[in-house]
Image (tube, rainbow, N blue to C red; front, side, top):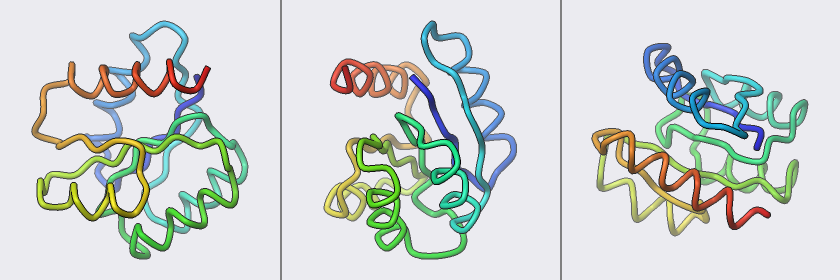
Length: 120
């Protein structure tokens, strides 16, 4: 499964990359730090899974999500946020899953694996 990371914090992207690269069958194909860069990366790589910081700078993620779906219709999106109240908005906007940045890494891996099984 090809994964794209989108977060404006280098430490978060690095931690996500380290976590995912330990999982067999997952490869990180790119990283984005803002909405415009994210759209370019998705268009270029058309990943299977996007780990998306719901507060990514650039444009509202509700708008970005519809563009992402047009660029790469099979894309699975897991939204990440340090704000638990963002869950409702993200899920209503159509993300496949939502994980709080405060959750343990095992919760993120469980969501990734759930998405991986649904994508087959």
